Image 1 (tube, each protein chain N blue to C red):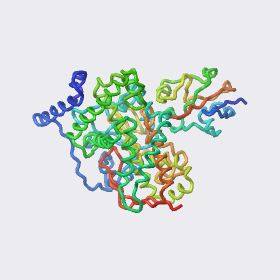
Image 2: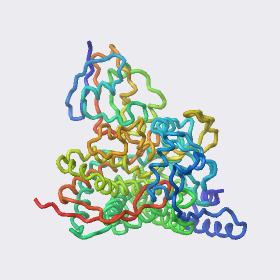
Image 3: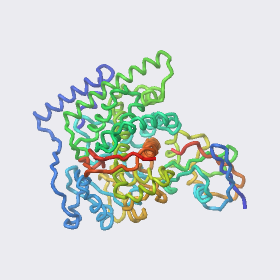
Image 4: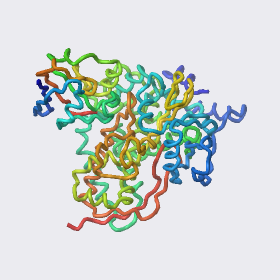
Length: 461
Length: 106
């Protein structure tokens, strides 16, 4: 049950959103103590067994340690080969279908008439009392109205304006890396660059940019949604903080607009300029939803592809040589990195009617999970899928951005950021050596890194 | 045999022979016309084969489905005569048609 939204929607115009979230948090705590409502699941890591030791019906790919323990490839391969549309009836997130082949995923993603993105795109639900509304989890036609209001912020035309700024920031970060000494690539490069980018997109105070990455991490890590390590108290605290700071930003921009100032191309300015969203602040769960969507969408994805690229080039050193010999391959390699990493492992849908798919009957109301991470390694659609090739043909054909009306809005920004990073890396470094086993995020949704120690060697010539 | 001319954003022209029944997207890709990505391979699911049909030729390009409109609406570059080239099947009646490429694919 969602206790926050009705309270908030009614009092929206009168009480600041962050105070409303605080009251909802108190209410949620009281409910938890007094009536012992459902509490969030706790995930304790145990060793994941070899997939060949399991019966098909016992395979549960929602296990949030599957990526961390590097078991995901064998699990998904078995499903693709033996049961490509697979039902797991007792996961900690409830029953769900897994779609694991490229063509079936494309079918589900395209058919928004058969599969709804509502109410949310994670396997599990949202934390009780904190159900934000975001267009990634809305069906047509509401989806289009909201998306169209904000898509300009990452439109290629806008990006062209930003390219030199992004490059200058990448240069700055890379010029300050220690040479020949181990450092954490995740912190020093991936998080730093994506935080700077987010601050630009939101026109958020630059010196406070690290808050954006932290907020995004909390928003994406709730245990009931994705099996992450977050806590409900932290989620409420962060929601209140995001609401407070972004409401402030909104009101500042609104005042500037009222005073006749020309607004920029940041997210808030675009929302204020659009007929459908200029009063979004009065619909707090939607307001928060849009902010959180762009925070998470612009953060974990690019961040983990920045780390994943370095990691995979260490696993395929001959590909790094090929790249150094021909830097013109960078744009193609960027697509290959995004396929290889698949930073968001899946999107979830709910069947709107009974649907026959690959020999199975999915019943109306069933949860359906499109495992992009599996489709991107599907031997039926992708040549030698477990081979990383900087010069792969049709590298753009990957599923990581999704297909259909929910296709990633920020795909061109992501590609540009990664392209610039690699252009600047190749100018400076001879080697980027991973010196210790990387550490991975606990989640069934975010396929990412928490730490990766590397050592860089400067170019001699 | 007739031809269709693709015009890049910078004005470069690419006349291409019509192959009746082939999609405009495939025709462009097979003739190395730059500026079309077609990430989904022609399934009306990504919007990266966006083209703008010359006003005078728009009615020759055939009907637009609701699905195509939804995908086209996702691109900020959309114009009144925008189409997804994977959804246009070429015909003899397109001899002389002008097809402009947008500055960016989304």
